[in-house]
Image (cartoon, rainbow, N blue to C red; front, side, top):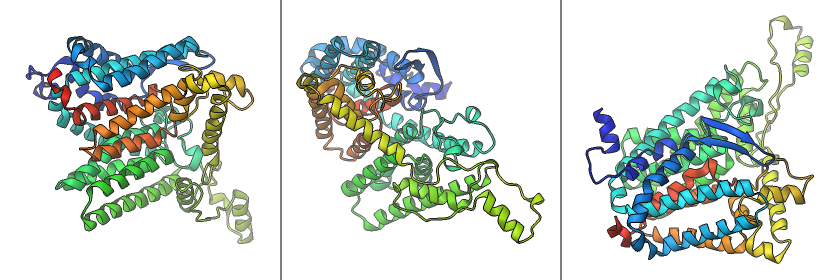
Length: 473
């Protein structure tokens, strides 16, 4: 009971329900896909309710009294006005959207996020009281989920996809070893969830005397990130880590040590994947071929160790020549789908981006005002019916914003990001988190599975980027 009281600061009368709701954000965000309730579907989307969506609604609801109480002060805030302008542009585009249902649902999420942002600015001082607690909780959850990801990869040797909670593209059928998604919809989304905590841990390593326990925690999270084999998440992590090193590290020895630790963690991860693949009873993958596949995928096909794997027929022929008794040899059932870099994944994203730009540039009106909120998928299917799958989305947040909201919406969005970076100039370590999330936005789009990105931006701005609005609390 005492731990429960300490977690939610029940004895602190200065902490409102809104702040207590913020305390659980580092816990809720990890369940971005599972568990969920599917209410139905149509030709363009599934109707699903997840824990983060329910949480966002409750967080916004608890923040409404603070928004109303500080509305006069908040109305004078440029950030409130700028983000509010983007909200208005998005809502106005519902008039001409090609997908009204998706547009309305997306608009609901945008409104809830806007309420949370404004309420957070109204409670800046109180939010800063829980900042350390929420960051500590985020790190603990990241380590816990990282350990679960390792368990999930091992479990995939013995259990089927449904039991191990793996997504369709995460199973050992792809490379011979599983790629963890834990409670996220895909490995890249799980990897995206790891970015903020792992960069926070590196920031602590760079700037403070860090304990061995914290170093181990950092390496566990990095190990899990590499396990996802998500190039988007790993490249985003690399961009953030380099930025942290450039802005913080002045000690070459410490920088070298950090780089060596990350390189060693990557090596251990690749070896682990090789061992897992070799241990799988179903798929015919050797340790060497699994290592080769992993490195080839991570390097976009550049690193090719060219390990040649013998087929079952080659093995039988060799056994016959050597007059070995084949009755004692167990031959595995099938080979994984891929033995290296999956170019199709990259090509699909590039193709979708190209088609989206072609659609956006088809008329002057569309270039300025877009096809309407939520309408990108339907428009692409209508204009390129033989090239777009059902329920396909752009898979690039920037191009999706450009297609749906035009140059008007995209310009406002860019101004918001630039303003956020500028406001955080006194805490440059936060830039690494922002940059890493911005980098990975080039690999997916949409709101439901990435609500944490918007909450992280709101949190960083409220805690580290505000000053004049403190009196509104």
